[in-house]
Amino acid sequence: MTSNQTDLADEYLHEVELRLSGLPLLQRRELLAALKEHIAEAREHASSEGELVEVLERLGSPEEVAAAAYQEAGTQADARTPASSAQRTGRVARHEIVVMVVGGVVALLVLVSVLLLIQGRSTGHSVPARPAPSATR
Amino acid sequence: MSDAAQLSTSLRRGTLEFCVLAMVEREDCYGTEIVRRLGAERSLATTEGTIYPLLSRLRRVGWLNSEWSESPSGPPRRYYTLTDSGRAALAHFRTEWVSFRQTVDRLVGIGEQ
Image (cartoon, rainbow over all chains, first blue to last red; front, side):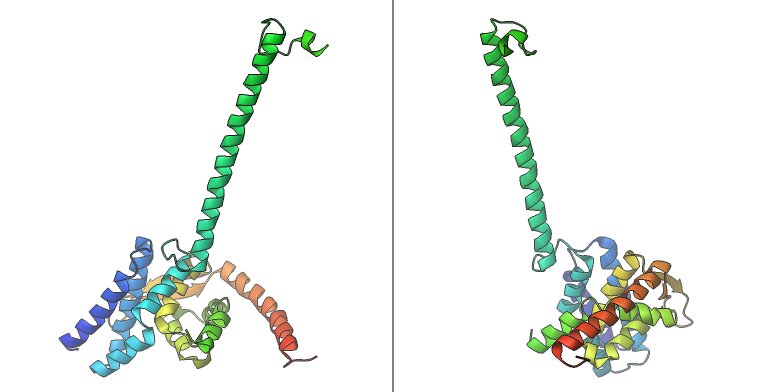
């Protein structure tokens, strides 16, 4: 193994690593270790630089490998995949539901207090929190 | 991506993982072995490096187990075994696949009419 070959393999792994920053740490480490193992093993049979290039070509470009990693991770990091934009839509929808629920509760509270106030006035300042029997007759 | 590449990507999605499970069902395999064998299947048109993330997912969902084995030469290697839930998933796929395939064959006009 020449240092040239080491450089080429290291460069390849580095190029992959650069593209994996959005993955969870352990998944990133696992993939890089697997690729390293793959290259190390292939090298036992590949002695020339040309053969190493073929090994790397069969592995696929760093872009391809990284894209597969994001896809299998079902990840939030790669905004281009349809899965992650669906997740984003889901989050937005949940956010809107929360706003609607909180708004509804606030509106209900306002309505109740206005009603109690009106009732309090019409029953001549009796206990405002209880529906006065006189008001319903 | 060309139409041909797009088609094989779509066909691969959802089926390749069961090819992996079936391979491990026959015998426990090293990761590099699985990758090389699938990579050699020309009609699957899979680049080897994209199979490692798949193996990782199959392990995370509990369909495959992985263990390390010492290698006489070089670093320890990861090898894979099929779990009970992986076996069940594969059995389920086999039934689904048969009826799916028959339906598609019939609809595209290459099976029994």
